[in-house]
Length: 602
Image (cartoon, rainbow, N blue to C red; front, side, top):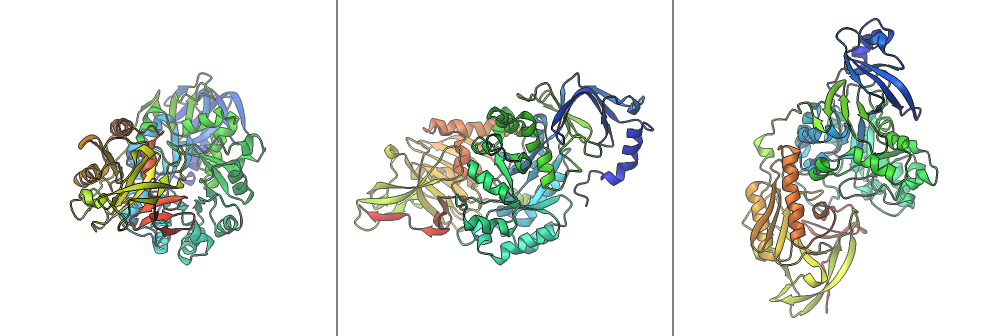
C-alpha cells in the first residue's frame, strides 16, 4: 500500500541493491559514526550509512564501495547516528499551527515521523477539514501520517459539534493515501456498550488493515476495561499510573506514555519497564498535545526521550520507544523507525545519548536541519475562506449571558465546581457554597472559584452554558476566552467578571477565533487562530510569542499553574472525568450524563 507520495521501496529497490553491492554510487554517505541499532539494541562504533533515492542502502563499517564522484559526504565524527524520532500520538492543532508550520517547528528537534489525529478540526469542519489537514501533511518533507478521527462528537448527547463523523466518512477516508488508521476512540462508553456506530467505524478500519487508536480515560480496570479492549483499540495514551500501563500491555495493547506541554504521564508508568521488567516493545512515547512555546523553547519528541531517560529508562530503550516500537505498531517497520536497509533515510546526529542534542537531521536522505535551524521549505495548503471564518456567535454577547440565576429567595447556594488538577487531564468534582447577589450566583475569588462558560460558536445560536471552576487562582476583574475548547471546540470563557467575559468572547468573534485575555476591561493578550478557530499559518516563533503573551496574561491575573492555557482549553473535554462543561450544560463524566449545576440552597 502506498502511504505517501514518497517513492515506495519497490520503486527504488534496484538502486538500493546496486548501491549496497557497490555497482552504483550513493547519493549521500554519512561516515564514521556510532550506529544506534534499535533492532538489536546496541551501539556499533565506526559505521557508515549509504543512502540513495531517500532510503538507506547500506550500513556497515566501510561504505567506501558506495562512494562515487557525485556522492555527498557527511562526517559523523564519532557522533551517534540515531533514527529520526516518531511521535506515536499527537494533535497538530494543539500547537496552534498548521501542519506545515508544525513540521517546520519540530524538524530541528529531530522529529521525522508523526502520527496525527486531526479530530480538533473534524469537530469544526468535518471530513472536509480532515482532508485539508491530510493534504497539507502529505506536502511536507517529513513523514506525517493521518489517523481518521473517530469521535465527533466525542460523547453523543452530551455536546454539540460543528459536524459529525460517520462510519461512512471513516470508510471513505481509509482509501486516502496518507491515512494510517482510526484516531483515538474517545467514546469508550459507546465501545463498552457495543454502540453500532462505534463498532462500524472500527470494523471499517480493521477491514482496511489499519490501526485503531484508543482512549480509555477511566481508572476502572475491571470488566469495562476488558470490554473496551475487546472492541478493537490497539493502543491507549490515557494511562496515568503503573497499573494502567501494565494492564494495557497485558491485554495486547501498546501503552502510549505521553509527555506533552501539560501531560506528564511518563514517570508514573515507566516503572512498569524499569522496575517491573515488562517487555519494553509494547511501550511507546508520545506527546499528545504540545503548544508552540514548548516546541520553540524546549523541543518535541527529543524532549520526551530525554525525560524518559531522566526518570530511569535506559537510553537505548527510550529511543526504541520513540522509533521502532512506534513504527512496528502502525505496520511501518519496513518503512521507518530504524537505520537499516530499505527504510526511509531519517537520521539524527547527536554527540550524547542522554542529553540528546540534535545537531544534524536528515529526513528521506535530505539534510533538513542543522544546529537548531530548519533548512527546508514546508509548503502550505491553500486554506479556503470558509475555513478561516468559523466563529458564529449569532449576537453581541452581554454580561447577562454570563450569569447563573439563583433559585427564588436564595441567599447562598451549594454549587458543583470543576476542579483543575495541575499537569493532568482529569479534573475533580468539587462543591462550593456561593453567595447570591441581585438574583445571580456569584463566583468567589477568595475560595478560588471563577466562572466558566461555554459559548456556542458553530451555528450562531447565541446559547451560553454557565458553571464554576476552581484551580486557576485568578484575582481581580478578568476573563480569558478561547475557541480552542476540546473537543467540540465551541468557545470557552473563564473569568471573575461577566463584563470582561463578554468583552473577551466578542473579541474572538471579531478576529475569527483564538485566545484572548481581558483585565479590568482592557485587552492584555491575544493570539489569533483564524483557521477553524484552532490554528495559525504564521511561523511557530511568531505564534509562540503571542501564546506566551497568553501565559503571561494568565499569570498577571493571578494564575500560576503550569501550562494553564492548555488546562483552560480542556475544560470542555467531556470524555475525561470527573466534571466538564459543554454547550448543553455541566457534564458528570463518571456517569456520562448531564448534571445540575446547583445542588441546594444554604
